Image 1 (cartoon, rainbow, N blue to C red):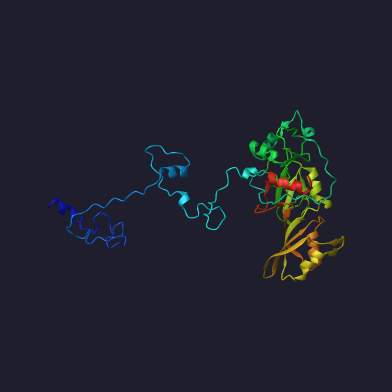
Image 2 (tube, helix red, strand yellow):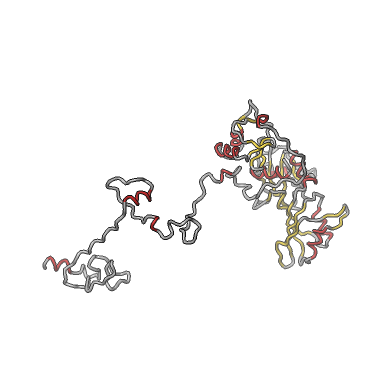
Amino acid sequence: MTQAGRQGSPRKGSGNNGSGRSSAGGNFSGGSRGGAPRRGAGFGSERPHRAPKPREERFIDPDIAAAQSGRGTPDKGAKPSPHKPSARKPGAKKAPGTPGAPKAKARSAAPGAAASRAFGSERFGRNLGPVRKPSRSRGPRREVPQSELHDADGVRLQKVMASAGVASRRVCEEMITEGRVEVDGQVVTELGVRVDPKTAVIHVDGLRIQLDENLVYMVFNKPKGVVSTMEDPEGRPCISDFLKNTKNKGERLFHVGRLDVATEGLLLLTNDGELANRLTHPSYEVPKTYLVQVRGPFPQGVGAQLKAGVELEDGLASVDSFRLVDSTPGHVLIEVVLHSGKNRIVRRMFDAVGFPVQRLVRVKIGPIGLGDQRQGSIRNLGKQEIGHLLASVGL
């Protein structure tokens, strides 16, 4: 067979086209790249095979390509960019935000964006919202020159903040220059200020930085049947039984508030006596949130009655807020918030309106909540949580 015959004959009779590509994708007409059909190509035709005509490369101005990539004039022999210059796109010259302008691509946050917030890398305390301070009226704050805050024998303020875990030292310096840091109630904007970590009271974005490493702040999810004491003469389960497996075993701790034996939920444990006193003092009105299960159905007007106040043997008592959470046949789950710390106040109020409590769980004290913490477990508060808790009572 002649050379032309060998080139035009099909390969193994497999139905391939003349270029050796299979037509199994549904392109049964043997169409070429340009879309024009080739009659008889690859189906036994004896016509000689013609190589496909090479495609013409699109001309790209090297100056435009170099300006687009931001690298100046390209070197000799460098391949031009195959991408179309952005100036040729429709609406490329229009100002952002105007009709027809291209949409800006969303950029991910910088790696250190979370660190610009005080204790931004911590797991706990991220969703506590703005810092809430008590509404107690205080006298006018005395303006103190920053030179009086400077302690020549102290430590640089940004170093103290970084050691406390607020952020990196560079970010702490930015916080100081932005006016976000207070020392002893005075805003500091100078980087050269030195302070005594043992006596200085430092706030960042309203959060108190606790510099005393000996102070302990913990959350205990008390189960039903546990007595709210450290030791019980009757031998019943108590708080100290759950501290045996922690590093704070034997530490003298205060439990903030009390829960009766049948009530479950959140107890704060701390050796900070000033904080414990303020959290339980009625003048600070620290809110406490409870989930109450009662027998259903629950009449609509009872919630308004609890908010208006019910008369108890020791005076009038009311809830700050009342919300129906869930209702199933025979049971109703209610959330109530109140700041009173009287003994068994929730149970007595619901007894007074004719709906004895079937189950009672305290889920929140001030800004600190249980979340998904396992019952019977104890965990240390994060530094953001401590800051919010201290701020809620004016510390």
